[in-house]
Length: 299
Image (spheres, rainbow, N blue to C red):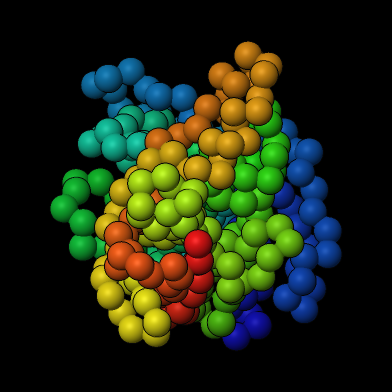
């Protein structure tokens, strides 16, 4: 087990263009100032339409290919980059898969050969997950999963406790057991059990209860609404602006800052109409790894 984890950590750092020393499963040093330290898997400039990538001219692609030549095909691969080499949160049928990027075909050819690939990235400033397995798309490969992570210090230029989609300042925690991986979002000052924020009718102003589950994605269950310990309803997916972040944004007066930190209307919100006369309830949801999270709300 230790050997497999060392391999993952070493490749993880290599794909960030770092040269690391791994001892007993722990990274002891890393050098990031090499000429190629701008993230190996980072997105390259789009190529002109109708042209093929010139892989021979890409030092990035050559280095990745050389590294992977030493990795057996039955291994799990983790990459870390600023921009995901495969799927991103936008909905463009081709562009969101980075099919027009310089090294897309080379990366796809290389990584599709391995047991599983977890492609991690930042750039988009939001939590996002996409699994190519079972998808009806000409892009990607069924062994590739893409995970985007929100900006750890909150909304751009604002840097307050909540980001533009309502997620708290924080980071992803990835756990590796052999070649099995799982992860969860860790908010600053909170534990693993905190994965959502509920809003009572007093907060929503429309007699509904809403909840923001900031790391919810495919593979999670539909959130359930409980009253007095009994399930009453499944909650409805209603993406929109997070109420708590909107309150923060409304206090911002600097025009430039407001332009950068405008609330996004795609926060991962779910809504339910509580039973008339009820003044409290509980929300339950299960993530893709079987962890159950609960949140109570009262008014």
